[in-house]
Length: 179
Image (cartoon, rainbow, N blue to C red; front, side, top):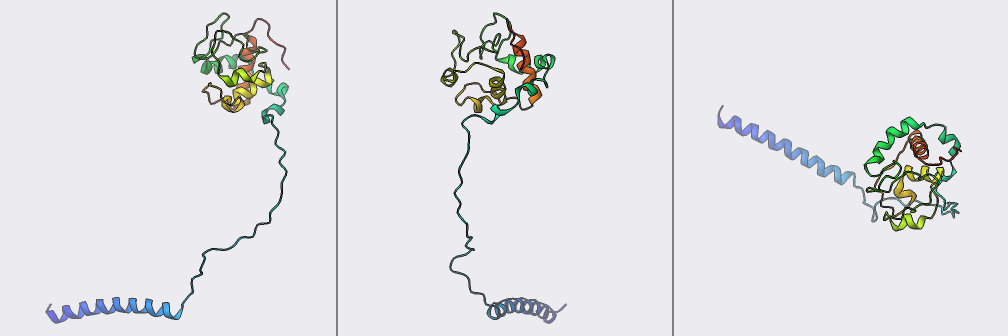
């Protein structure tokens, strides 16, 4: 291949490049679009005033505890309680661990064990550990009592919560009658 043919190939490639650039410039002139000063669209929103009817009581307070307690059983509650046993003891006369001893907990006032240092939030809670309170607390402890030092994610399944509550109730000198 001589230099003349090589020059023809290079000239053809340059011509194609110039043609593409030229067509791009000409099309911008022919199809000129004026850009808006402020990009976007104005979305008109009709303002409404809405009255909030949020209750100060947690939503879990409105569940049917009697129906919930029929879901659980003591045997599976004992198995599920093994998650809790890392921090709590359940035996009569058991000592406090990271968490307080839970023997006789159902029906007991929150923050009632004298030789355990509860969080300020739990001391201020001031309610007895009823079936409803335990259900709400076991669902999400940090949400039920804000400021509690119990670092447990909670039990999502209703059957698991009911089983643990039944197991806690059974581990008592005087178990409360189920609702």
